[in-house]
Length: 144
Image (cartoon, rainbow, N blue to C red; front, side):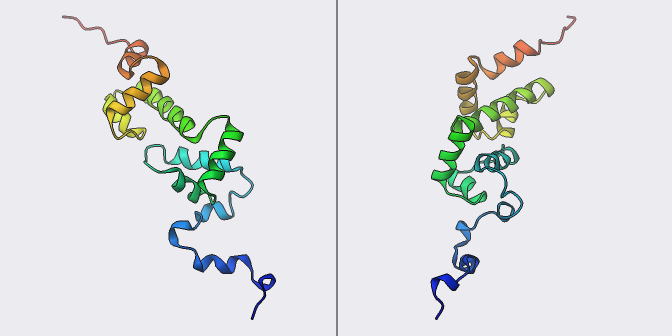
């Protein structure tokens, strides 16, 4: 019978449930990156998707508590606050560079409900998305 010293840590991988396995890319390639940087990489690639903090943590090979603690310490804000800010600034970029409707932009930055997008935008910037777009993109001149 093997003693605990003889057992290599990787021999336990086969006993992990599929939902607890770290994301394959987080095992080797990103070991030199901090937890918050790994999370930021994941969040930026998945900006338009819905996920939980547990899913983010698993994808980078850690747990929710460690993710939240390290992210706050390294970035100075919570994961949710950082993500909301990133989504809203991406929405501004889309407003400035496209003619997409606000509802489409809201969906593109990960808001399922347009009202949630408007509420978050107004709380962060102090005006609605439509008011913002009009302030940076005046309506085209029409001869009538």
